[in-house]
Amino acid sequence: MTTENRRFAVFILTHGRANCVYTYEALRKHGYTGEIYLVCDDEDKQIKQYLALYGLDSVIVFNKQEAIDNTDSGDNLKKRNSVVYARNQNFKIAADLGLTHFWQLDDDYSYFGYATNNQDEYITKDIYTKKLDDILHVMFDFIDESGAHSVAMAQGGDFIGGGEGTFVKHIKNGKFSRKVMNSFLFRVDRPVKFMGRINEDVNMYVECGRRGQLFITVPRLRLWQKETQANAGGPTDIYLDLGTYVKSFYSVLYAPSCVSIAEMGRGDRRIHHSISWRHAAPVILGEQHRKPRLLSRRTSTTQED
Image (cartoon, rainbow, N blue to C red; front, side):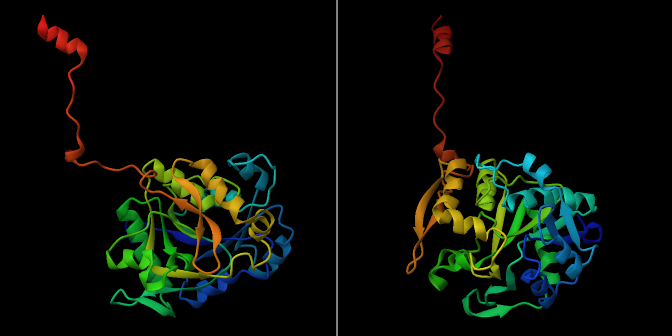
């Protein structure tokens, strides 16, 4: 698809945080000049505040019950507080607006920038961008040409281990990570289905990845997110209620053959999911793994006759 035919916008998914949509300001601060829409559900008690702050043209309200009816929540708790419904509804919203591409974000991002310098060395000092428009054009070109279903920026947790961590090694070796979290660049004509009331992003990219769909995190680019479980509203209430063990176990329920529970971190360790991509994604086997074809009993009998 040519740049001239591409029409995209940014969607910020938000609930109960009308006065704390940090992502909106961050986008403008870092050079994004395009359209921004706030996506809220019709059960949000702060709809009037959102409209007053951002205007009727920038706030899109969707039918939450309709979204729930079309989403696999992964449990029978009948709780409605989850971003998964907005994530799935976003594809319909984008199509109704006539978009070809969109960038789906949460509402608690404070900065966008780089993880390495031009020598692919990990940056310990925060380096922010002022050219988010240019970065997005390149990322949309990448999703068009790669055939990926979604492309994302890296996040803070990806850089555990600093310069010796997995993500920095990926950068030095010219590799990508087969996942997408927190920021999702999509093509409207390549929809995906999020699932699970919690850990919906992990559930989605693992399940879709098992079907051969491609998801890529670009490790050189990163976003900064407000401290998890510190910003009231949104999914914070779920995490505080159930804890990270239950959060991660949703992914085990969806893909027990390749997802397990593990500890993450060196100092303040916490429970997290662990994915074995060896057992998750389809692979292409080389000819050296081909086994000799054995003659069937029927064939051998025929030859003897």
